[in-house]
Length: 338
Image 1: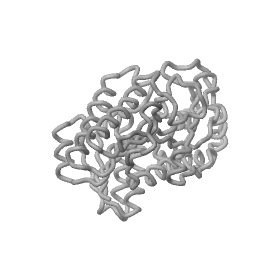
Image 2 (image 1 turned 180 degrees about the vertical axis):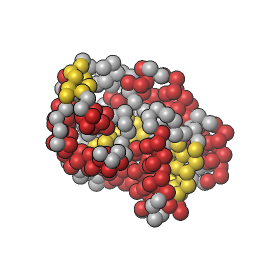
Image 3 (image 1 turned 90 degrees about the vertical axis):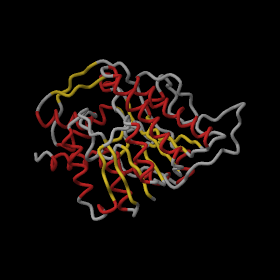
Image 4 (image 1 turned 45 degrees about the horizontal axis):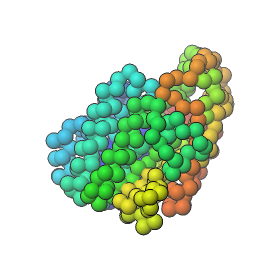
């Protein structure tokens, strides 16, 4: 495959690119390397990719999804067989502060991805959605058959919009599209704005950690290697129209168009307090906790039903939480030299 990975300097993009290269594919990675979080971490991820034995099959371009002419030229020049769109303005809480960045990257930018795939007949577009699309839905575990029409953050709304935009293109142009609802991804090289990184930094500095909802929130924490495994298994499986799709009683995860939605998660839900306890054990240090109420845009719990993904690909997450956290802590200590 000749694959475009957008957001290649990001957390998931870096790990996916490394895996695709190891599997023998050629990859072009793009990223705008914005300063939403430490740009040096993004540069260091790219340096890691450049040092791989397969680096000759990887090329990076600094490019913003919102750059329409730049994106069109890239697609026309490269003739990608597959595209994995991981670039986005991430973060639920930041969407309350800087909504404009979400409209530019997650809506305008995604429109350029869809146009590039359409104009250049890309064989399969996979795109990152999010567990946040489930919003006010409290039915657990979250199923791709559930209604997701009640997002509680702009970030979630943009991800739901991506699913709808892709469906329209799939329906109109027969373009195979697969949406991936990721559940709370963690692991080495993870984003500094996410809980595991924030908590680790605070604990090693002896600073208090902010524990929202008194630590009673629950999340389906999913290790990065398991996320990548799910993506890699789906990549060659371009969907076709679902012959059993009934427009009088539509399945929310399939279509008469070549379009599908899948959850990729650990298929377990863990209370935040238990997550913190596992981190304390891995660090051999106790956290000072600042107990706070629920934040706007957050949800009480997430839990992935992965039956559709497992049925199609045989996917099963294989990394226990404590093992994944320990791997992150090992990386953190090495990277930050503590």
